[in-house]
View 1 (cartoon, rainbow, N blue to C red):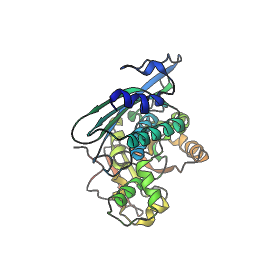
View 2: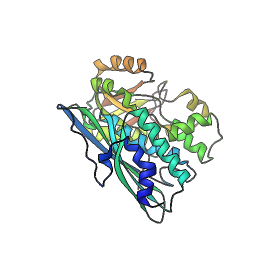
View 3: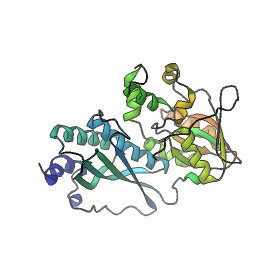
View 4: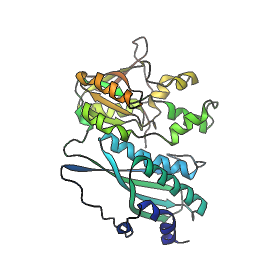
Length: 314
């Protein structure tokens, strides 16, 4: 089966019947007045962002949800996405069916469609790239630069589960609650369903892809301030705490895709209440302060020295 046969059989159904999206360019319908488009792009590479043993469904879930998480940090709801794949060898039908089937499930779950893309072949590793487009009310986009000293740091949920999942997949630690942790690694839940609440109360946002300390540091840099966080109850899940890894590993492992939010003190309680009512487990972990960088304290108020702050691509 050639490129066009693959597109027709496996990826055309992802356009959800939009025949205008079958050429090399996709024509998006006009949007409502008073609405901005948000665009983000992210890629995953075999052996870097997912294991060579990963199933096609796991790869599909992870690459799409990573992009949706980026939309959520801007307060945007998903609209559509472009899909690009580079195969190291001719893909098998079973692989394509599982990959596109997983994408279709997530499309239905998160409310978007595929607006086009490209497929190609090259020696090396499997490469998958997605460019996602979302919508947000005009001039309501959240930025990393909105934090101020005194703002609270609130997480939409615990961090560290995905890192534990990776450690289990690579046999670095003994499996325990394996499905829970592996799902955290391959099937993170982007907080797109909560964006209206987040836009209402948050001043800045970032998702935890490279590690809590590293990503929170990006907010500090953009907002020209520092932050201090503590190992408060709820920063790690109960299951993660029982695994027994050092907190520094969980704080810097990444791939969680929870959001770290800067919230004015007066908005902190309403935001926590609203997110809890939506089924999340948000937690206030500290505050922004004057200065630079992220300071991490243990349960006794002592500074934790970190060998690294998070994942580095180079």
